Length: 305
View 1 (tube, rainbow, N blue to C red):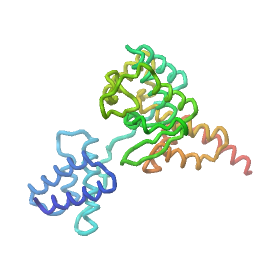
View 2 (view 1 turned 90 degrees about the vertical axis):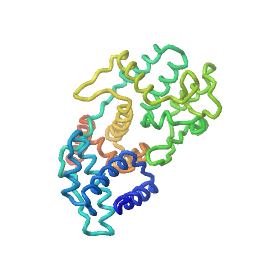
View 3 (view 1 turned 135 degrees about the vertical axis):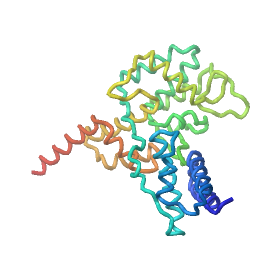
View 4 (view 1 turned 30 degrees about the vertical axis):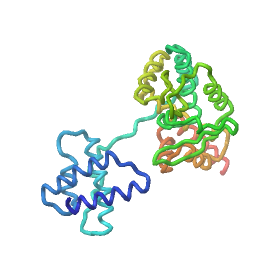
């Protein structure tokens, strides 16, 4: 193995010790190190980084991802070898853009829940009605929701224990209505018997944990039956329920006069965001939220005169 290859192993070990999985990043960096080995290059330079990042056969988004992965590795190496050059991701301006989130109305969420009642069995209908309701009122990621075990729900306290990105664990207090809905779902007499060792909270007809691809396929079916259509260049997705929860939480703060800064900090923790910037993005992504915030600022300025 080359010296760069050994350094890559060390870099991945350090990052994974911090909780990062790095599956795609490892694949990209292995390819880059092999490329440098083929060129007999012993150090990363901006020239070789950009040249490899824009190799044909990929989209602008892939080119950007390649360079971003190299930048992280180069930054690590630069700490012990100042001759290593760190490429700036702005050299490839066409990086991935975040889509504007789909903001569901109350009527659309209710339509999705009602559409779930058309699914083939009563248990399947109840599963998706409860799942959609939980996503809408707790702002969870879909992966977090289907990863829940029954033991993660405390009906007495009305709390869910969620394992999110980077294996971070957080406790989510639920509204009484959500607690009652989850309790009723778990107590259903038609709940299928699960295989030995299966502890999932949400289970499929055979009693196994829900699979993401099946959930997404079923959601598209429910979305069509509910008549929820794309608008303003954004598509209604499962993740849109999380966006809607975040936007409504901040809208409520602005409309009721609550300290928006404090509410945003609480929301960041509740959503399980590692970086506060990920939560701040909701402020810029929702025109309705920006409008309310601007109105509040204008009133504040008028009162200060």
